[in-house]
Length: 203
Image (cartoon, rainbow, N blue to C red):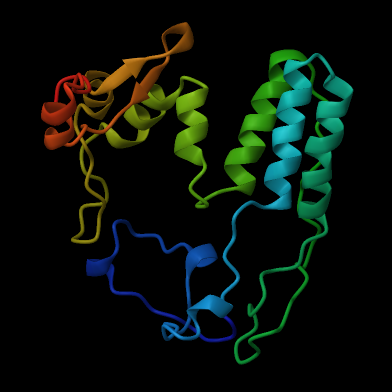
């Protein structure tokens, strides 16, 4: 359901079996009207979670919990998304029951884990996850768990898996602080040749 209209998508045009409703546009805008679209740069929840993480790293755990729980409080009181009602593009509907999103009371490393998990949940499909995995040094382990396996499902619509993806990331990565892998793309060949730049690893 997208702005009150049931939607279908062509699986052959999708990279996976899932459609990101957050980024979906019900009607392709004309060029002259594209400027009227609300382009999301950064969400308030992202700011709160950045603050929570910064507070944690500066030893202010109570403040970290406060800002983390502000995000969870909003989640507890949320409606379903705009246009959830068939035929009503502006309709909002409250859930039948209050979502089970209790305040976080954790301390120490469990608090940091809770903040990072909240980022994954709150900012899902908003193109933050990979950067969070890179900066926390967990990219290789995370993608290996979900991508480095055989194909699943068995039907024609199952998702392709990518054998050895963790090792390929390591092969094309710089080594950052604390041994964290930072994946990089190749530098264009003409730039390497014209300016004598060292090419990124194994390209």
